[in-house]
Image 1: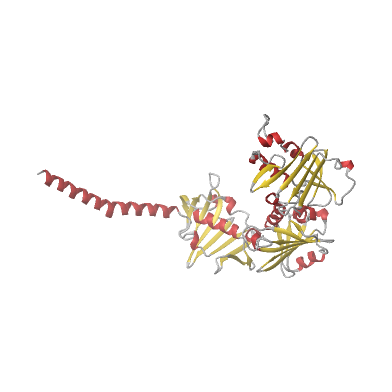
Image 2 (image 1 turned 120 degrees about the horizontal axis):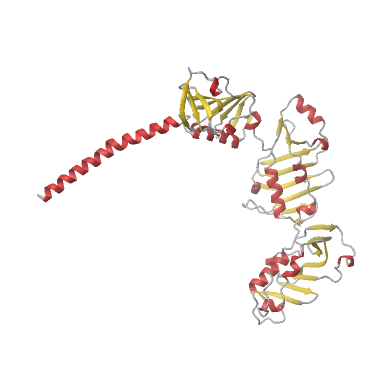
Length: 457
């Protein structure tokens, strides 16, 4: 009897589960899908969109998705589109949702700003098409009234006015003047009215470039400075575009000698941009790529960013040898003198080779000496050293390489302002460096761990 009751309950539960699975759940899911679709502004997904036409008071801009997936402008002219601006527009349209239906086409449209819409957007997805007329802002911020063409309904949407208002042809035009990936550059050439600087990427196609100056001297480059210059070059964007025609011809006549010409060499070919400032008082700067291309109005600060002295781009570490290549470092100050020797990856004192040093202190100190950069250049050529405290320096460092030859030198002199005078093996001339290094020279006792004072930080 108990077995029959259990079996009956199982049959009832199975039937209930089948009903929920086959009837209730699909109906609920269908209802949810219908509610979601009712809230969608467009009947198709962002990935399906193949064309957009936007009409504003400034005219029509027509965008089309090319076969390669890139977006191009097809009207009022044919040119490359700014992919980020196009994607932002598509995302806003595809994610736009309907808050509620407020009227239909037969109702007065003026209260919603739809009698003369500020913007009309026609979106195409293959054979499908939808037109949206955008009116006034809604009662809440970041809402718009929209008249949807397919059903003639006036909708309150969550579209943000900033995504659609004041958009123009310039908004959607490609503004990057050059296109490149830093690791793909083989050479970088900076040409000025009186000189030229040529840098080579020595990394051989590796993801992280390694730059070296090849002209007018052979020297290591300041990797951070060169990368910063290339980032600025990537950021070189047009504020305005002067297309071929009478206006371009008139502007071009005023362009004589460029302030700087930048050429990037890659395996795919060369790209060149010339920067002009025909009238410095106007604050306007012009960029030119090739004769048949448009001219570009750019921010004049870019001219300063790309007008580099050779010193700016050189490796400014004064000692002249990388830390991993230092086999021996002689240290001499006015109150201490010792020599550190690297024995199989560990530092020892020359006069106490059996004593174990605090390796973290020695490593940090040698690294600081090897990587100390010049902050300012005082003189390009060597001069009398006495006025700068460099005949009897406050500190002297001499590095010996693994081949037993002197590989680097650094001398620190008097304090001037907030910087020390210094000379180094890598760069010719007189320089200034940060004075912190003087307080970071450990004593023998600190290296051996005998001192009660805290180690230099």
